[in-house]
Length: 194
Image 1 (cartoon, rainbow, N blue to C red):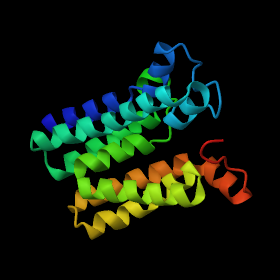
Image 2: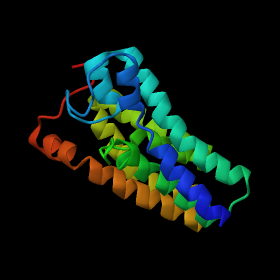
Image 3: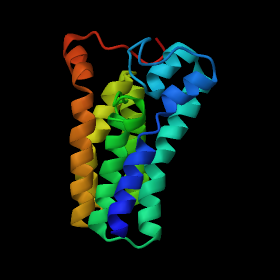
């Protein structure tokens, strides 16, 4: 029963849309109706600038960290920790509080992985930074880091339940980037700073 409560809590906290809340508090347009129509930090950067985007990014990251860190702190079994991580990302993708219109899950997924294994989180951050530096495309960096995540999880010998968590989250995040992938192949994906 306790484990189910942690999983429900993870989905609920994941459903708190940092982008929408930040935009409302700062008097900015709803990110679901402006820019790329995605309630995430990159779109908030487009419509509201660096400060709003930074707050959104931190908020999305924290809501990935909190449920997994709490599950670990309260000594939940690995399967419950894994499901809590997945639930947090699902909450971000399909937030119950915001008509199930969520973001793409990168920052929240990163928060989940950092809480589950800081070396894994560090490797993902480094991968994102290297790809972003080389190609100047945020979505490409996110996709490459996401695809690498299961390999890193295996390399760091995470428990099987957490490796499965990373695989499921990677599939969800890549799936949410399907339009970005189409633009990448078409050569029309926007670059960082433009």
